[in-house]
Figure (tube, rainbow, N blue to C red):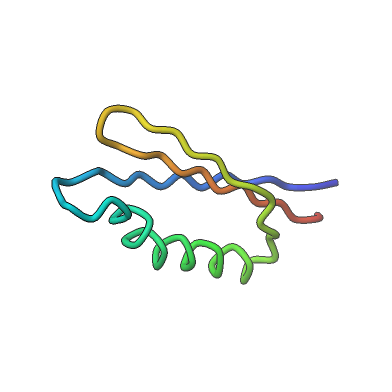
Length: 66
């Protein structure tokens, strides 16, 4: 049997000439979430992202055997 968790992160676009600012700004927080769930015994399975207006929603999916 498996247990599943979803972690959602939201990032907002800002006025800048750096077209990769969200990717650059989000790396640290995403890595922290990956480390946090790994410490609890979860495995990262996949991710999805969607945008709505000026926001980008990133969903991280984890699972572990129970």
